[in-house]
Length: 391
Length: 225
Image (cartoon, rainbow over all chains, first blue to last red):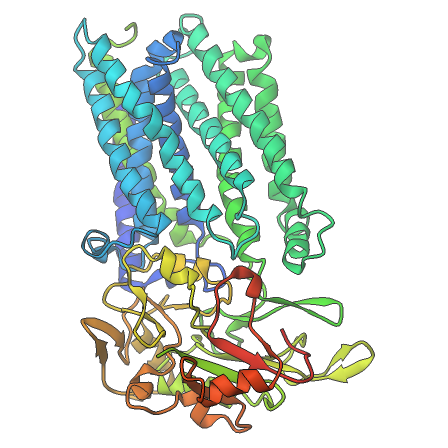
C-alpha cells in the first residue's frame, strides 16, 4: 500500500467518525458544544476561517506559479491546486457543522439577503470551489502545450484567492458591535495571516510529497514560498501591534475590557502565536535552516499552529467584550447575558463565558479534516501517476 | 405606524415581573430570556451599589431594542429577520438557518438561540406542563410565533406580536407593577409614548452604534445608560 492510499484510508476513517459526530449533534442540538448566546461562534467558525486560509493560500500559490513571474513555483502548482480544493471543501464542511439548521441552507438561494456578508462569503466560496476544481482538473489532465490554459485559470484564480479571504474578513470587520473586529486593520491583518497560513500548508504538503531527498530540486520554489510566508508573518505581527494601539490607554470601557482579556485571560495564546510566528520567520529567513527538511517542516507546523490560535483569538476576546458595558461608579459592569443554557440550581445569566471546545466539537472537526485528507490522498496519487514531479 | 416602547426608569422597581411574564407568555424554554432586568453594577440583583459615596439600586430593563437600523437584519443571509409594516423586527422561524450571525451582530445581546430542543427543555418543569400563547402567528407566509420553536433557530422579543396584532399591549407592559413601561406608535404625535419622550429626558442604549432603537428610557435622575 502506498502512502497516498494510507492518507486516503486515514481520511475516510476520520470522515466517518466526523459524520457520526455530526449526526449526533443534529439529533441532540448544538448544546453538545460549549457555545452559548454570549459566545455564539467557536471552534467550527475558527476552523472555517482556518480552512479558508488554507484554501486561499493554496490557490494563491497556484496562480502565482503562472502569473506575476512566479515560474519557480511551477513544480508546486499541482500540490497548491490540490491543497486549495481540499481546504475549500473542508471550509464548507466546517461551517455546515456550525449551522443550527443546515438542512435549510437552500433558503439562501430562495430568499437571499444581498446585504449580508455571510451571503457574499457563501457565493464566494462557491465560485472558489469551481475555480479550484478547474485548476486541479487541468493540472491532472494537462498535455504538453497546456501552458496557456493554466495561465487562463491562474488569471481567474488570482483575484478569487484574494477575494475569498477578503470577504471572510469583512464578515467580522463590518460588525461595529465588536470593536476588536471593526477596523480596516483587522481586514489587512486577516488577509496576511491567511496567506501566511495557506502558504505554509502548501509548503508542508510539498515537503511531504517530494520528500527529504528532493529538497535541492525544488529549492527555488521553497525559497519563494518561504519569502511569501515571511512577508505575510512580518506584516501580520506589525499590523496586530498597530491594531492594538488604539485600545491601549483607551478610556472606552469595552476597549479596556479587551486589553485586559488579551494580556490576561488570553495572554498565553497571544504570546504563543507571537513566539511560533517569530520562530517560523527565523527559520524561513535563515538559509542554513530553511534548506533542512526538518527545520522547514517545523516552521510550517509552527505557522499552522499559530494560524489556528489566531483564529481563536479573533473570536474569544471579541465575545467576552460586551458592547453593553456600563460605567457604574467608576467600575465597568457588563450587562449580564442570558446564555440560553440551563442547569438546575445555577444562573442562566453570565458576564463572562469561559469557552473551551467540547469533546464533540473536536471529534466533529474530523469531518472537514477527513474530507481534506481523502481529497489529498486521491489527488496526490493522481499527481504522482501523471508523473508531475517535473512539469 | 412605528411601534416602540418607553421605559420610565424612575418608576422601575426591579421586580423582574416583566421578565417572568415575557418568559411565560412567549413560551421561552428554561435558560432563555427575551427580557432582562438587573441592578446596574451589582453582582447580585437587588443589592446596592456604591455610586460616588451613595448606595443606590438603579435598574435597567433590556430586551430587543427594535432598531430602525437593525444590524441583525442586515447580516441575516436568508432574510429570516425582517421589519414588518409596524416597525417591529421579527424572526421567521421557518426561514432561520441557525448561523447565529444576528446574535454576533446585535450589540445588545438580546437574541437567543435554541441550543437544545425547547420542548424537551420545558418538560423539565413537569411532564405535560405547557405555558405560553398556544396558537401560531403567521404574518404573510412568515411564522413569527409558535409555542415550540424548532431546535437550532434564533428567537427574540416580538413586542408580543400575538397580542399587539389584536390591539393589546405586550405582556411586559401589561404586567409591570410600577407602570414603568409604555407601548405605542411613535408616528402618532398624540400617543402616550410620543409625549413621554418629550416630557422627560430620554436616552437610548448605545446611540453611537447608530442602530436607532425604538426603545427609549426616560429618567429625570439621569442615572442610567
